[in-house]
Image (tube, rainbow, N blue to C red):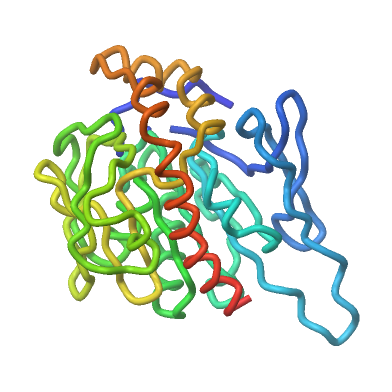
Length: 291
């Protein structure tokens, strides 16, 4: 994979199809009928969830969750743990002008992760346009959607909102104000410490409900029907964060802003991870009900 340019978080880079694997190995996950692709993911993460046996003649295949990633290290983390045995496919389509993505109505759920690029940088990353189209279709089809960081910004753009480049950097564990009850956020409490790592920010889409906010980033989370957008990183656990901290571009970000995320994580994650998993299981429940 080509080198990733220096990140402007919520603004980060990458291109291809992803699998889930242990350190030093690759394991395949299904992408389309009859095909598989794979790349390494976070050290210590679990092996991929199998797609299950082929459907018998006359029976439709089970719906799966599509996870769109924008960098190998930006995997689903706790989201994958919450989904459990739900079949899922990981894809990276940034460099594709016309990626072969499934129809939204055929999905059990759609998860869109973070990355170093801007949400509307279609000239350099043509696959972003297809991602936004799929997000809009998923909301229209009432498919459970979870967008994280860049994924939230793509969701906001798909729903007609503006994303502001270099709006204001937030990096590290810091409080976010939960202003509206939501099944995913309620287990976190009213003012949880969460991991921020972005520079761009999205406006609230018309008709969406604001769920969480900070002074620097007024829209930290929103819900639009079946879709939830999170500007912060609720998916991060110890293993995923360890990979981030050893990724050169991420480490450069931390050095530039003089943030000791590792020390913060040792204090915050033991309490945050169980609450995050409880909330993310609400999303997983919506996926299971559809799948």
